[in-house]
Amino acid sequence: MIAVLEKNDINRIKELEEKFSNIFLDGDIENDFINNPYTKYIIYLIDNKIVGFINYYEIYDRLEIVNFNVLDFFQNKGIGSKLLDYLIKIVENKKLNNITLEVRIDNDKAIHLYRKYGFKQVSIRKNYYGNVDGILMEKEMIDVKDVYVLGIESSCDETSFSIVKNGITEIATVISSQIDIHKKFGGVVPEIASRAHIKNITFVLEECLEKAKMSMDDITAIAVTYGPGLIGSLLVGVECAKTLAFLYKKPLIPVHHISGHIYANNLVKRLEFPLIALVISGGHTELILMEKDYSFKKLGGTLDDAVGECYDKVGRVINISYPAGPIIDKMAHVGKSKYNLPIPLNDDSFNFSFSGLKSAVINLVHNEEQRGNEINKEDLAYSFQNVVIEVLTKKTLKALKEYKVKHLILAGGVAANTGIREKFKELCEFNNIDYTFPSIKYSTDNAAMIAASGYYAFIEGRRSNLSLNPISSCELK
Image 1 (cartoon, rainbow, N blue to C red):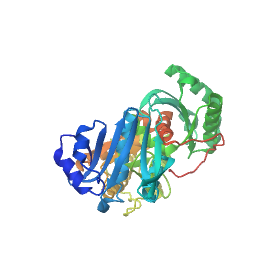
Image 2 (image 1 turned 45 degrees about the horizontal axis):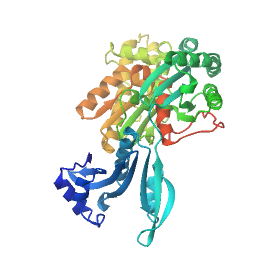
Image 3 (image 1 turned 180 degrees about the vertical axis):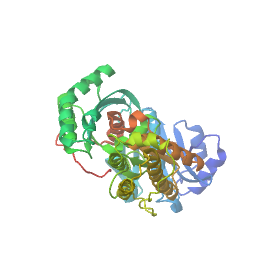
Image 4 (image 1 turned 135 degrees about the horizontal axis):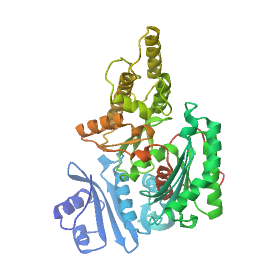
């Protein structure tokens, strides 16, 4: 865990001085720390013992890292990154302008870490470390006060704009849904979807700005879903974003659709790292490990149908209208265990498979009809959803335990499923795991989640020029 070293904690100060005596060669850190108002320390504790620290000066509008070290035995375990993450949050909260530090020119490992966090070389300081040159590095902090991101989402059949402040506060969101248009087809028709986006997009933008009582001049940056999704639908949103960025000279931020679903949780509660994200939607079923903002490690995903897609296909088999997921969820709550269905891909991997479960439902319905038996839809919904929940919870809990993570978030349209929420809530509380579920309104496709994700991409320095093109299929990174 990370803690702030207090000036009255003499024992901790002495422990720090003893363990890192090779760092503090110049004298009494106790005296300097207690009497110098600018000197501060954050420490990393394992089993209540200091194993790493950052010593820094906070002077007016800037922060200078003086010493940064982790004991040899505890290196390469992510401790340095966690200390830096903590320090950067301090800088963001206090609205400081920059962070500076010196590093030995031959310390490749440290230089790589700093560059990963956005530090840039400012100058070379000759013989700064005796006979070794030092590099002065600086990380400029974007003024995160009142950053308004306009989000645009058009990856499937929702045309949506949203304005989010500082990644956490929704100012206004407008969604134009096409569900009624596609319902008669039993699913989304790509050509019809893209035409509807073209028809609606300017009206939705105008309504969003009017609802927020803002103009484009008030917008800091424009975030848009560039993929994955239906290529025609994505193209409408991307072209709109590029046009607005060009006309109003705003930064253009490309956002992966799945990162949007993940950051929908940030509109409920600030993400706490490390975390495991279970992404469950019409097009995706994935387990993602995040150790900090905009760090995505895919642990596993579906090998065929996504879980939401499976719900819709099962719905068609038993004559439930599109979208079938919410209806099957309601039916499952009044049904009972009657039908035996197989548990798909019941192995130790973090991958999923739902095509076999879908086929099992199709075969069951066909066989019952051949025998002249009437299918009890509520009981079938219960049996089907029970298998889905068992698969999702088993693999997710395995990931949480294997990676020693104590925070779970759900993301995606299927995260609105009450049966899935109820079971994860029960299991997380039993296993002492923190959890965050997105609000129902943020679970399905919306631009608020794109704007929330776009804010952190903006802070990371991610930008695109006007050559940005949509991509129908792309990995989250």
